Image 1 (cartoon, rainbow, N blue to C red):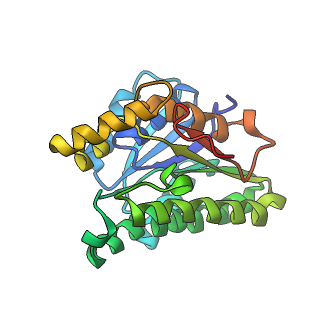
Image 2 (image 1 turned 90 degrees about the vertical axis):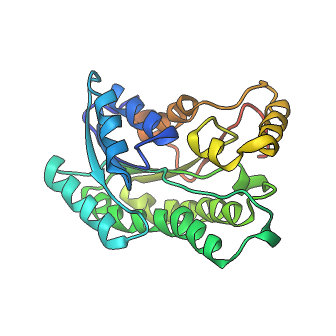
Image 3 (image 1 turned 30 degrees about the vertical axis):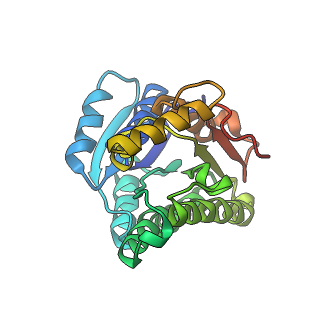
Length: 253
């Protein structure tokens, strides 16, 4: 995949899709900063990556804090000399109809899912511009492409990430920095279990599975493969692209 020896930051790398991405990048030979607000979970990911050709390093980071993300970027450059890849994966949601939600939830969803990735872009782009290369992969969602009942503000944030990424892709193309987006469909993670608990949640999951032509939920490893493609040299001529990994649930252009 052209990842051997490259350095990467993966936010939300302590669990779920983020953990799968970290393990895949390390397996492909990258040096990975496993960034997570739950540093114990990040250390677990590092342990799981112990036999991989690459290297993993656990670091505590709250992506809603711009200065914390800047410190992470500085620490990574001091440790490994450069920043080749950023994967904006950290996210959070609460599934509820918009009319039943409130400002406290809106603010948290926006802070983590939109402002957080913007902070990460701001922290790593100066280093990538200076070195004249880099790849940024943001995990959006098919909810940001086609909408999702009970996820209005989350969908807005994920749509925002797509528009933001396409704009930055245009602005930094002259520096040979690539910016792409991966949009998972319903994926089997702890967060999905959390937001779809109880009998109602089970019905939601069943409806999701029936809506997917492959008749299954996605697995974190399905997303990791797409991220590895965009992170590595095999996608050297791809920028500003949006790839759905949903088993055919959505087929919008």
